Length: 299
Length: 43
Image 1: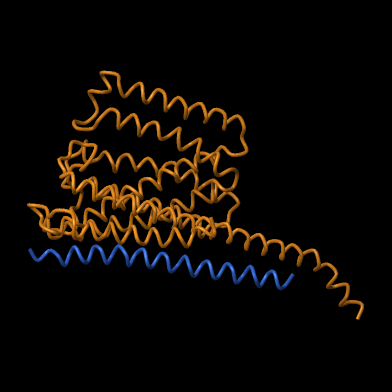
Image 2 (image 1 turned 30 degrees about the horizontal axis):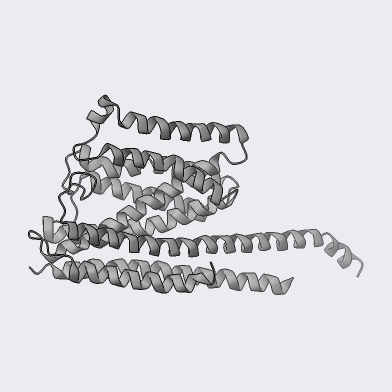
């Protein structure tokens, strides 16, 4: 991977450049908003990427909480399987199906539900032991960067379209800001707490913080909001060329996010190595110190 | 529509944020590598 990394960087840069070219020059202009709507090609993929990263953080945090507790781990494994199976069955039950917002396909809901066990087992297999915590902090930090972009590009887009920078009290906007604040506090906790329990506390905070992600995503269906309805998976009527460009832009952002996460993951491993080396040095210093007074007294 | 300036601002803001974050990553990487090298020398 180390040798492949520069090549992947060049390919991703080219992909991002191509996606930006398509966003600005190839995608058709919106009849109502004009060219300013093209912010969607950065705003929405950034939001989807942030949600995905917070979801990865959530799964890694759950796994980390049950690490070293075989019984809890086994229970969690069966809970996750049950969530996947029962979730898919429930999606197709008529009473539940009737509750699904208009335009949202049950198959899309079932696929989303199935992602929970899929991610749980894949992450547990790829990132054993302490690497789960490294993955959690990586996903949270990069997720915060993408969420920051959502919160910055959103008002820039809202100003010419809505006439205001921020719709105060709007549930979608407020819940996104709360989500950002939760993960910023997660990172602050990790940065400034020196307790041995910090990683566990952060994992618990991440599990509760992740509950805000479905609220952000579903808020536009269940509450009256100024934010527009979703463009895909929710009965949106987006032009196919625009949709294609949007998905291409998201793919480019996903490749970029992967490379950033890869770098951040290795940085965290390196920082832990430094911390370990410092601890070893301190231990060596402490074990050597008893001889110091003795040598002084003999002078 | 004079809204194109908002479009440009949004795109620039996105890459400024990414650029800033990538710069902090590079700085932290070089700091960690330097510290590790120094600790290695002391040993």
